[in-house]
Image (cartoon, rainbow, N blue to C red; front, side, top):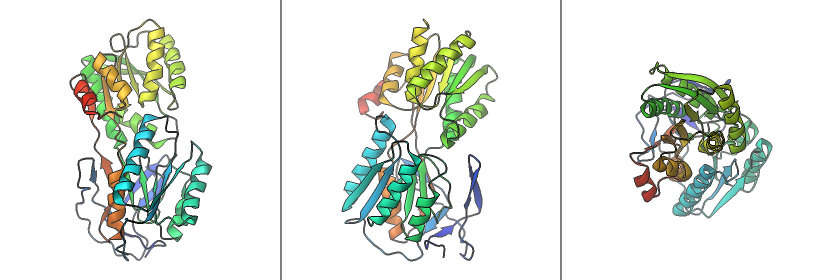
Length: 354
């Protein structure tokens, strides 16, 4: 038994989070059973084969339970707003007695303190949207010592699955980058001179979206990446960066950005330079926000790979399974849509973009 009483099932594997290694393996002394295929069961995600199982299930209902949710960033970001709404709606549907909600507002220290406060208030389970790939260890260790299961969402963070958290729910960010490369090839006929505006350096999402795009470009020799520069997930920074890139590379005719908020800033720079977004500069973005999908419908952006923020139902499904001794997939990969001119209007009508 580990310090938390969490048991792991599945083969040994290692994850690297910007230089931090996390071991997907049970604590020494736990028999390692052969993994069975595990699916999250609904349309929004698919579970990994490696699972965590509570060796001493309480068979406790989520109904009436005190649960915490630690948000990491300001909800002016549409993704974060949709994410929080999903968790709150799922908490209500599960009948929890109270959802302890906090927002770290981009402060690592505050997020650690927020989680520790939830534990002190008696939270029986906690859902965490980590700010960074490292830094939550003190809070996760405290949760483990109190036998409080943690589900992480959106961004992976350093720790041992089945010990520090029972499941991670998120998009396949490498695959997002690869899909962006293919979307760029489709949008440009396979010939383009591209600049890339990346997320904040040191962030696992930025690293994986960068790597995925680079891998995808290898399949399209007519796509040339001229330059890459961080936009720090900021519209203001992205606008400044795009201004610089347009000056340094006047022949650029395509843009790939890691997030819709940066795409909006970059588009302002493109327009101010006298160029027409979507025509003079073909654009592929990631997130799936309503603002960018509307631009796709108008022809100003070519494609947007969704980052699905609807974690709530899956997170509470994982907690329900944990308390009942059922297998919990260590990783649940969310299903992300691809928005293009072909489906943007229909998607907007359905309300899918957030």
